[in-house]
Image 1 (cartoon, one colour):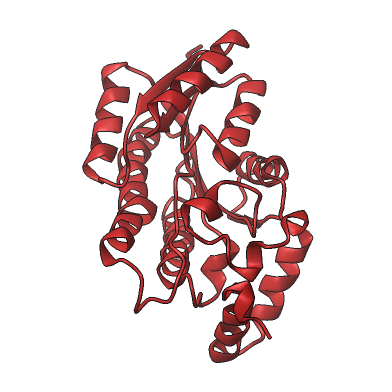
Image 2 (tube, rainbow, N blue to C red):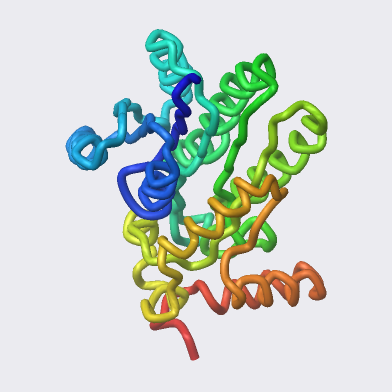
Length: 264
């Protein structure tokens, strides 16, 4: 029997790292992708010391061309990827008229372009084998307009819609697609997004534990579910948001996400 491999982007920290640990515990070998070579080496060594076959690939997925290179490296190693996890993603905080367009274009490339490329390439291999699973990390942000994070919310709306569309296309093929929708989670995301001044992240005690989010995503993926909203609070938030006009929801999100010093 061939060894089972899971490929995970953004696997050196946060939700991606916790997912990698779950796959390892379940007998999967790992291919982990990160742009940080030092962290990649550390995590690769950690998994190997725990008896897991782990291959690290350094790739900056802000450049979509590198997504093609990741695939080619995996093909060169003759590794069949049974599970693909597209976890790598970033945001940028601020009002759109003031934010850096080059950074936003990079985020679109990371959150959308590289995700689509990896999904396309590994999906076709899965279809040939008639076996495989794909987990795309979206967000509860995919369900609402996002003032102060307009581009990030927009990219996650794409990820959710894209995932649900191809899932329908893949019925009866042996391949499933699952979207994981976390809320505010205690990871380095907000630091990278320059978002620490936002009211939404001031109360760290209200943040979800990435271990819990990863567990929700892992269980939904293995069960072949279409999507999972992680956390009861987030489920309620999305359900209530579905009942509001978009303009009302956008105002509510704006109040939640603007800088804490601007709150009345």
